[in-house]
Length: 250
Ligand code: G
Ligand code: G
Ligand code: NA
Ligand code: MN
Image 1 (cartoon, protein in one colour):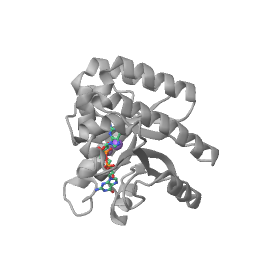
Image 2: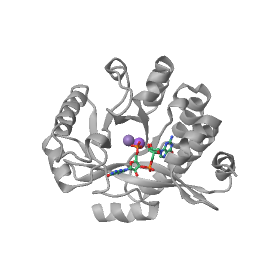
Image 3: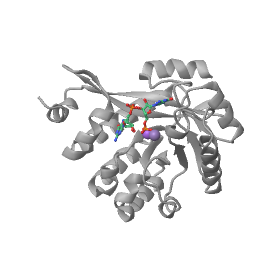
């Protein structure tokens, strides 16, 4: 059987689940948000990672139901976090195809607005370039109802400063491509520092992804990076483990 066909049933069968990766605020030394990452417990193939099924879901339109399910799950889980005293935004990755889908935008806004929970969306610039007018308009609607917009994988895809300056984003995530070898590369530190300066000039917070070493974390702090995410801080983890991690963190 094909993975794509199985995916259609996976949501109803409860085979999808979320893990959460903390985002550490460097000056405040607190977890200021978490990113939700989807996984699929396939009955035959075992654990399937999003890299192996998100593209299929985008082709088949199953991405709509998958993302609505993710938002609903995140709303439940964010309430659990808030009840334990961790009222921090949970970020959902939003596929580019959904940014020009007016029906999805209405559903997502309705769910999130009525929930009252803190949610962010991570979107790539490549997604915006596909249909800029529509994407930028929809992102403004998200931002207007309090959804935090983060630009994901900055520097790794199709990028245009002409669009970047129009996006209602408050967070810029530097791609891990520039971060994982930060302290052993000649050019990565130059790229990271100039990206931090650019983001700050546009009044955005900067998140470095792919922070794997203490030396990278130290250099990012010196460079004025605001938030760090990566295996050094924590791998993506299940909600109960996240709650333990946050309890230790206080
Ligand atoms: O967790 P992992 O490193 O395997 O994630 C791989 C990719 O899958 C990342 O690019 C991430 O943005 C994407 N991804 C994870 N969860 C979701 C999701 O819920 N929706 C979408 N569209 N992409 C996701
Ligand atoms: O495209 P996106 O940025 O959403 O991808 C997130 C992916 O990056 C997740 O699959 C996650 O498992 C992975 N990831 C998170 N932290 C690290 C890290 O420190 N190093 C590497 N190599 N990958 C990471
Ligand atoms: Na992401
Ligand atoms: Mn990313």
